[in-house]
Length: 143
Image (cartoon, rainbow, N blue to C red):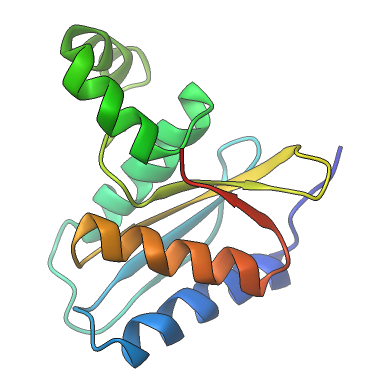
């Protein structure tokens, strides 16, 4: 099984934060999980609000738990709100169904982790995740 290294997780964070600064976005919290859902790396920029880490983690947890990026979870929440509510409860409450939670795949399509970002608009959070994942030479799957 392919495994994301700490160095790769840190590259994802650096790439995401660099993109955010270049675009003058709000301060971000970035969470990188490995394929098991264990925290691999985390960073919160100065000025992030109090619960941004939990929101970033919820985006990544939800993506891994349901096997789809949080953009797809957002659509599903609109179409099947009871399912998303039940899934949120089943995984212990850590599911945030809005863009910004992106699965990380290797070149063969195997999920090696997930990235969750929170701090700006959901679309901007997701854009930063895509840049960071690309910087680490993985394939982003936002859903």
